Amino acid sequence: MTDDLKEARQLLSRAVDIQSRLGRSDVRNELIHRSVPVLWLGEKREHPIVTIGTNPTSRYFLNDQADWQTTAQSFDQESADLLASFQEDDDRQTAVIKKYEDYFRGEDAYTRWFGRKGGAKLEGFMNGMEASFYQNEPPLVHVDAFPFPTLQFMGKIKSKEKLLRLPEVTAVLEETLHYLQPSLILLLGREHRRRFGDVYDVSYDSSMNVEGFPSARFHFGTYPTLDVPVIGLDFKPSEPFLGLGSRVDDRGAHHGRYGKRESLRDIGAYIRECFLKRGEGV
Image 1: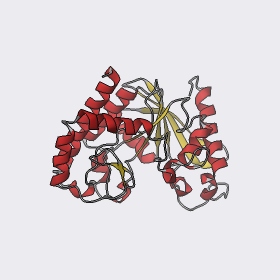
Image 2: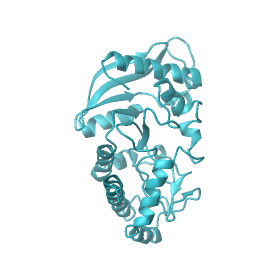
Image 3: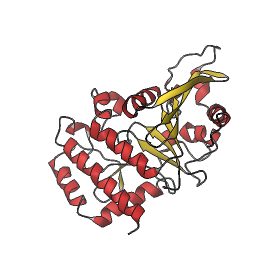
Image 4: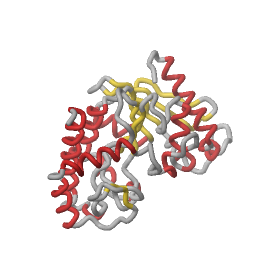
């Protein structure tokens, strides 16, 4: 076993312990039956760009056979037992980690959120940043702040903010970032930017709007623990109207224009240019 795989399995094991505890708490009915944590998606390579969203979709999750599933049921005692047995099975742990690594290589990617290769959504935005989830260079990995699949969209869960700020949950994200050793952290949405700043003592030293897209605001900062640059977006490239609402911007342009492939690439390219002018690379 390589040191990298050993570290990955230890990280997964700690996350499974946390999911087991959550499965015995008052949020047990929010979790998905027979799932295990989804700690990252994409091949771990040297100093990747890491995008951070909310939590894994219920459409795809890892069951006890380490297969992506599409059927969700309430988290119950049976699944807790399965998680306990999972902790004793090295082969299944390794299979889960391989699923993380291979996610964008096959047909499993959730394209309604990530976008297709060469398409729109988050992939289109990252293409503007001269990166792609479907190519190796520069390495690009996605992470969720809450790595445990839920039945509902996280935005519909009343205790969302409490869940995302649980010390054990924020510790998992921190450990995952330490494992991945990113060259850049990209926070997808205003609430993530603010929460990340609160929890990890990130200070944002500059803020600006994208030229030609005045509703698309972004911030530059630093994650002090790893001394890694952070870009916090006050919009969400994967959501309709970029999560800005079905309105018009200060120039009278509808936010629907922002979500087009060409617009997303232009927005990404502008942010990358501003980032490079700071003397930092992507």
